[in-house]
Image (cartoon, rainbow, N blue to C red; front, side, top):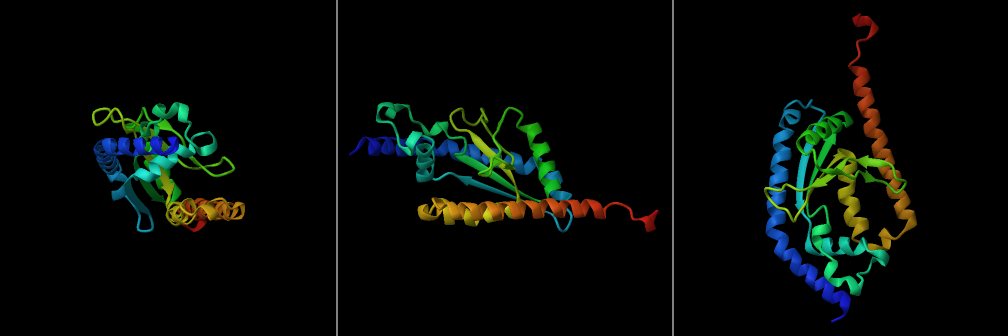
Length: 213
């Protein structure tokens, strides 16, 4: 067994040890988010949407994420014992899909009040522009080893990511294609502009017309 395989095997074992805590953290964070966003959910207009999704990061995905964070995307054999999945912020993750943009902002403001100590690391595109708020941190009464994460995503963008993730992230030839990454960025920009423009149309329609004055 090579050193890379030994490190990978140890991390897989660590994942099994952490898994019960990951599930508890996820249950806690998801339940809190659903509770705190109930007022928003109950006030939605017919054309508005709010969907909450929760997932435990899979073992191989967790190991791969940790490996990709290393220089050269390989584990250093001399630091083998230093690597830990506890360094990942998203073992327990919740995604909130909101439409339109005004609801995303509302949900973001609500949750920041209830997760005040969580660190912000927005989802960004390849140009460094922010696409979606993302936060991570501990729920100490549940676990001091596993962090939770939540992100609030424009709904159309989030639905595209569900397809794109399987098509690109898990299929290396496409993931490494500069052309495909450019096309993905184009789609993200178009969906982002659509949601922003839709929100502005809604706001404009709420303004009284000259006939109403």
